Image (cartoon, rainbow, N blue to C red; front, side):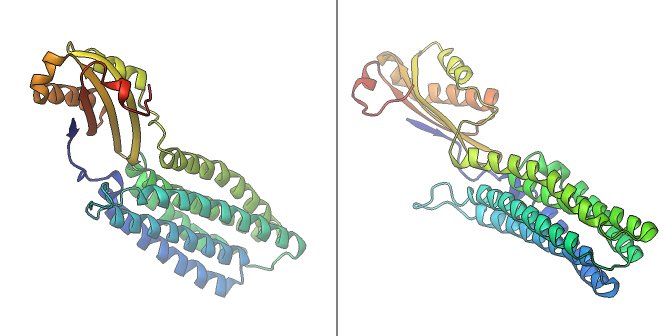
Length: 303
C-alpha cells in the first residue's frame, strides 16, 4: 500500500491571501465613505449599500480567516489539517448572500410604502466611488476566482456590491432628474434577482465538495481505464475520488495485481501515481496493491 505525496501542498485559497487582504482594505474604505455619504445626503439607499458592503467585507474577512486556518499543519487528529475550512467559509458566504437578498427585498417593500427623500447627486457621487473601488477589487480577485472556490465566493461578494453601486447610481440619476423616489427601490429588487443565482451556484459547489462527491473534472471510468492499462494490473475496485478543498483533489483505490508482480511494489506504485498525477492532476493518492482473491474477504466493497 502506498500514499502519493504529502498534505503540505499550498491551497489555491492560500495562494491568493494577499489579494484577499488588499480587497478587504478596499471594501472597508468604501463602507466608511458610504456611511459618511449617507449621513450628509440623508440617503437610505446609501446606508443600505454601506450595510451591503460591510456584509461583503465580512465575507472576505471570513475567507481570509479560512485560508489562515487551512494553512495550519496537519495533526494526528486532523490528518488533512484544516483545509476543508475554506469550503465551509464558501458555503457561509453563499448563505450570507441569500440573507442579503432577503434584506434587499424587505427594504424595497418598506420603501414602496414610505419613499425616502434623498439627494440624487450625493447618491451618484458616493456610489460612483464605490463602483470604481469594486471594479478594481474584481480585477484583483479575477484570476484567483478561477482557482479557488473560497476566492470565488469573495469575488461574488465584490461583484454583488458593484451591482448595488450601479443600482444606486441609476436610482440617483432618476431621482436627480425626475424626483421619482421609487427608482432605487425597483433597482434594488433587480439587484437581488441577479445575486440569487450566483449565490445558488456557489452553494451547490460547496455542498458538492462537503458531500465528498467526485470532482466534476474527474471521470472515474477513465481513471479506472488508465490504471488498468498498466500491464501488471488485473483489476481496480473501491475507487474513490473527492476534494479536500479547492485545488486539492485526492483519490484512493484497491489495485489487484498478480502474485509475482507484488515483489516490486515500489516501482509499480511510482508508475501508478505518476499516471494519476500526469493525466488527472491528482497530487495525493492512496493505492492498495493486493493479490487476486483478496477482495473476497475485505468486508464492505465498492466498484
